[in-house]
Amino acid sequence: MGNSQAQQLVAMAAKDSHASFNGRETSFRRLRRWASRLSVAAAATKDCQKALKQCRSTPDDPEAQRRIANKWNRESRKRIHRSTLFSKFGASKSKWPVPNVESLFLPDYPVRCCGPQELDGFEVLDVIAAGSFGNVLKVRCDDDKKEYALKVIDKARLVHRCHAMVSQAKEEVSIQSDLSGKSSCFVASLLSHWQTRKRLYLLLEYFPNGELFALWKLHGKFSESLARLYLAELACAIDFLHDSGVVFRDLKLENVVMDSDGHLVLIDFGLSKWLRRGQVTRTMCGTLAYSAPEMLCGRPYNHSVDWWSLGILFYALVTGKFPLHAAPTCRQMRQLVRQHSFEAPASLTWECRYTIERLLQKLPERRIVSLSGLARSPFFKGRINFDLVRSRAYEPSSFCTQLDLSCRPSSTEQHQLTRLRRPNFDPEEAITRLIDDESDGEEDGEGEVRDKDDGDTGGDKDCNCCDCCRRDNFEHFEQDDETLVEAFGTKL
Image (cartoon, rainbow, N blue to C red):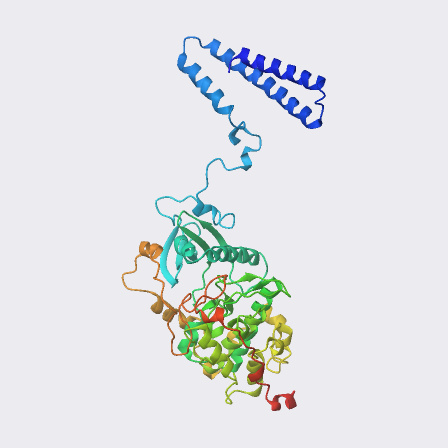
């Protein structure tokens, strides 16, 4: 469009506007229409004059004139576009497209540019554990020469499983980052976290004395004295999480480790969820052998499921076995829980049996679901000061009896390393090796699902391990609920 054409358009618009005013077409809509035409024509005239001036400045360069004409034609057909690089607000915007595989986990996992090797700055020493989504490696930092546990999660497997697992991975790092800033000696701290193109990384504290599961497998069972201290420490950890608005949902022997002094520490928040007091959720997750009845039935549940898992764990500590063998499906496990009475063996003291049966009440309303309720039980009353437990004033060695002569943490280190270390260990292979997804998990002699993810019923979504969990109308447990032994009431 030339300059003369633009001027003719302005003249025509002015003439038509004048005629419209004289022809009684004075409605507000028509006034707006002619005002818009006049403004467009004026802008077109100004741009045409600018383009003509540029063309006259380069009369001997037809290529430059063609570029100017093409630029005018393109911009005349769409909105004016300005790059964010030259905007005063451009620093707050991305100057290049972020890959979807990275933006999916932002901003919880910051992107770290890596060199030829993804673990620059760390030396891989061993594989601590393996799961369906990645490995937990024992590494040594090149800067401070300290040993850490590095959790490596494969993005492809995580996204392939389901989209809910992505949100669960982001919630895990959100919870641990928040809890690491609070004072609790019974929860493992998250030191750093980042992502690369293919993997997510969580740098955690390393506990060389290994899992409580290894010690339990080595000794069979603990004395009630030592189990009392361990139960108190785990109860303090669970109470801390609940006060912080978190439900753990995966309390088991494998997720409890021992520090250098023999105290217990909770690890692995992969199935944890933000849940304030009074809220409920319906997610079916965790390990079947530790799952509460309300979770197995698909009913809404709250923090009380963690106290049921604590009761199962305490039962295993003092008896050396689980009250129930893990079933392969939710329906079978639900039937086993409904038929079982969860009575403690008569060989235990009545205070210990009372605590077990109060923690393993099938109805959450009758269950011990708070630290204050547990502290009032005869098993702890007058024997344990929970303020001293929180401050780690008690030494685990002082609670050992003849049954626990070899319960010191140092006795399990060699057993742990022997169990975990493999022949021909290759650090590079450990970084990239991910175990294949297995079916419902292996059941060991105690009826527990041993592998971390095998036997779990999934991430932050409804249970898909068996279709019956979606079809059934779940019944309540009122008809077969076991009340406490009358002798307990008389002694209380």
